[in-house]
Length: 355
Image (tube, rainbow, N blue to C red; front, side):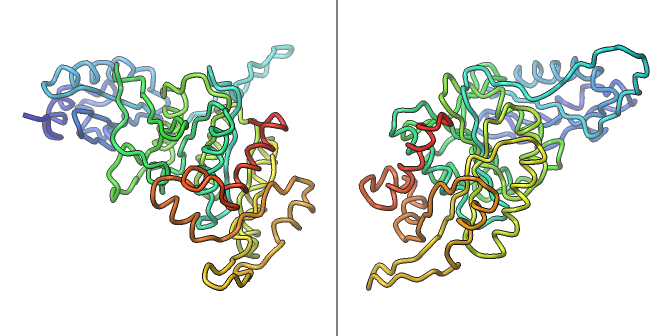
């Protein structure tokens, strides 16, 4: 008989909260509990001030749940919902200890694909660049960090749940030569991710460090749109080698793209270049060309900011159908002019030492 959510909650209620007189469930520490396909996952959200007191509780929870019949894997992410600043150190001549971003073992480079707003085709660009780099012989990973709208499993034709041999290490999925991990693989297609900032940060860090990426030449990170917690955490926790900004030529999109560029500049991340997506539309029936969202806006912005314009990608039915069908156009129609746009981006990234 498969284990149920109620079975797991019953076990968790036997664990005492070391701070209060209640159990960890009644104390409200257990968040985002999911029980599916013999895998149990939840977040243990604690106060940062008392985090040290909960390491033993987390381990005991893993051990007890793993002992349940019908449980094959357990993942417990512990996050702190507040951070207490350390008191100022007024002693002179004492060297500070920096806690900056770190390299992820086995990954040579990390490139973020970002956009100022949604709906500009950022995820489509990310999946095609990843596949194009793989076609060029690079060892490529793709992290779908767009936690609120994960679409890479659909675009890469990947389904199923990632496995975990020890309940901690996550084995990623792979297709078209691209190693991929996404929050979309952890939830149902119609299930919303309703998480607060600290829970998202814990999940992102787990996907960065607990996933068995293997040896990669480059990890492509598909960021959520905007300038929120996820891109800031990525820059602060991992050594990001650069960012590519995707925008349509529409004025409204460019306004938000500028904010995204400013965020990366403030965080000290190099802008590798900009991509103008949906640059022009050519009618598949008559061949008439029209600029649905305007034209040249991204090129002008890139020139003003002194960053390269990596490509102008057309608005084309084949690109959309390929992504919806689970095989990016670089894979499904590799000889098409649309695929060549992405292939050229990949070749330029390799030539410039970015991938």
